Image (cartoon, rainbow, N blue to C red):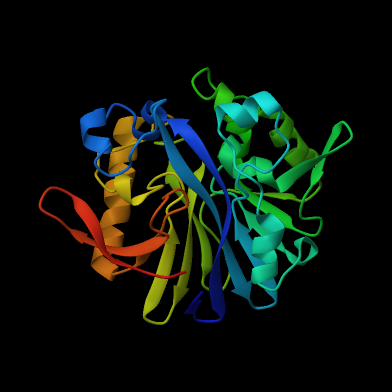
Length: 280
């Protein structure tokens, strides 16, 4: 737990999954990335799917929703999907599903949106019945009609379920949800309408890195994801984020890092590296 101004931040360690090494590190040679994350015998990388919980000002806000349970046995095997620890993690934070008031989606790729829904018969229904859901307009439109590269990343049933839920609110650009809680679009490097979430307090602030910097192993400028649609733009967007983090000693939250939840960073010999880990 971390206190920032009127808010307390909690990590909900709800799920783990595995992706092919090329998906996680793009064109970065294996000889480099296996120094920071060790692959299994199938060349898959084990990753966390953490949900950041922001409590304060009468609100309980989640950043993203992981993958959840509404997947076929085949897909669960492909992603080596772990058990769904949502209720246990919420209980540890003193909450139930119905007490979640808001969900901010960094973007609507499968590992960020699907956990907001569960199967009931042949329907997908919201896991958090009282939550408003915030997503950038550009990202929602992209998710409805993805390009050929991203089609498998945006599972249409979940995107359509969000649109039909009546809880979605489209955001167009930077938006302050509450004093000190802000959504900031990064551009289109990873995907159109990807956004960061910033939580600010006096003398301390946290930035949820989304999939721009999903883990500490991605702090190097050229260490992007195989899912990135515009790698060069991603590099420029990451450079701007790192300059902000370094210049203001902000804390960076990693949604997918299997070892480090959050950290302050510093300039290393070759690229930006973790300076000190922070407990969230």
